[in-house]
Image (cartoon, rainbow, N blue to C red; front, side, top):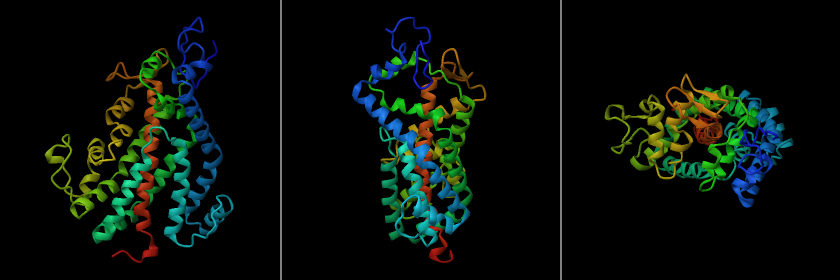
Length: 345
């Protein structure tokens, strides 16, 4: 048989009968006509966005980070078709993030994604909080001014994800599994091995995403209790009493699992528990974790059964979705800290 590095296969097959023995038909057999057509459409759109659109967005965002207004405006107007001139700092921030979000959304796909819901809920909470409580805006301005390095790091990591998209893009397949399909793929092997490089993307992306969670809890705190620093009396069960934060600065110092728990307890933001699965993070990031090429599983001393390589790539896609979503959330603090709005008091 011929091995397709983008399709899980059964290497020991000696006929075309078992699932995975005929790579060109495996996905169609497993997903069915409709789901396969949707998967193929989303996959091709994602590959095209990374190949054809991202280079322009990368150039635009780099000029934004450098503060090169002339080149930023030229790229935005001539290559992205912007019909007006973003003459202020906060306008350029908005244009840069909108361009980045337009491409990362396509790369993430539409099936099983929650980014639009997360961003929409955050935006409504954030704008409501700004209207009612001055200290909310003051917090976002202060924190936004100190987030330039984080902003650059997030963009750099998203760029690394896109540059290596081909190495993890098949993780999209898991979002199309119907009942019983996952079990069928557990016995198949994805014949490719970029584990070290892709795990590096996963780990760095996971850590950066967790650094960008604070605007979500700040908006929720202000809307519910009138202050971004007020965490109230309702805390996730898993967070010990001594670890419960009294303000955002204390929240920043929490372990990632606790940060995620605070976000995930807000209705509509529960998917972060899945996108940033700390238990999976510990398995993938364990010092002994490796890709067993014979079984096609990612295993470690801590988790001998591990997960399939396809499941691992699905986790990588989840981190990319989380990081690209949280980049749009972080944008609120960068806009708020713009010098266009006068000196910070």
